[in-house]
Image 1: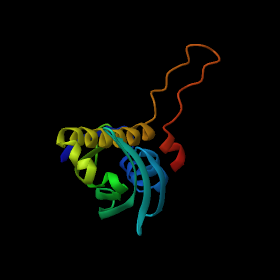
Image 2: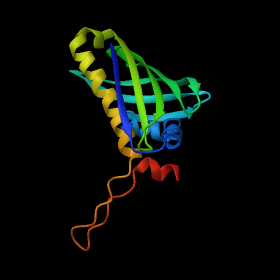
Image 3: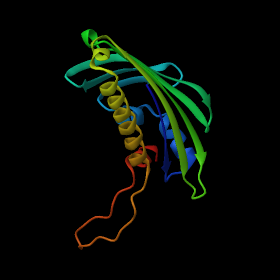
Length: 171
């Protein structure tokens, strides 16, 4: 299954680049991630719980960051075994470019494969699930980086919207 898409993120490329390499950011953005340990250099170990159709499984696996061209592109590769449910593995080639508005154009190309009981669910369910996971990851990533539009509070005791959580984490 292949999926390609792009997102325009209202944050400078240096901030977006730093975020994609941060293990805490990755853990928060990976749907169902219960644990993520390790480093970019050595790779990460992850525990992810997912439900695909009628099959719910805990996947234990690895995430590797490779093909790094600082500030421009990288590949995120993951594979996990979910016991009797089977296995899942995939890779996302991610590229970063400046936008005219001072933000970042993030493009990604995802390839995913599954086996075992998961593969028996059929390509339509698996393809939809893969698209949903990729969309959730990059949506969480984008939402965490962007500053919401600063609006004046409608009432005196109402707070202004807060800066994106990744921006707060990175300082």
